[in-house]
Image 1: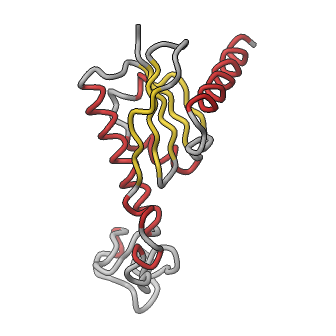
Image 2: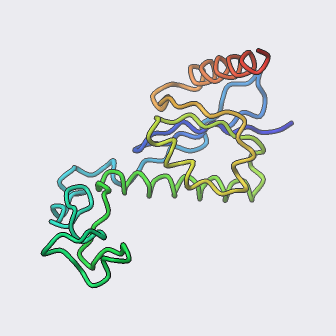
Length: 173
């Protein structure tokens, strides 16, 4: 029988459950917590965003306005002081998505699961999709853009079953 792993995640926590037998309760096999989730915002935000951050500046990102015009601006290349428009929280969420992706890839190579269900908060689901290995993506039988990290195994299973039934019903129409 195929083992299905159910990943329930958000930017701070990922719970991974295993379902080998639909008649048996889900087994929680991993509870990953982002290192950044344990830190205060002041510990993550070590510096203020600089004057040439992409979010608040039209200088130094390829424009031709006065002071910020760099020698490489005509090519659209940023100068050395350029900072991408990404908050420290977004950066930490991406790092966590990479950690989850690596964990799933290692477990798949060990043959620990054959199918995957992913349930994640909408923003984090996008980050997770971006970093999932191409070998893992075909194993996904369902994606749910909801955060069920606080649900127990039985509640999570019920939510997943409802989503699978809705998916099947929409395919029949």
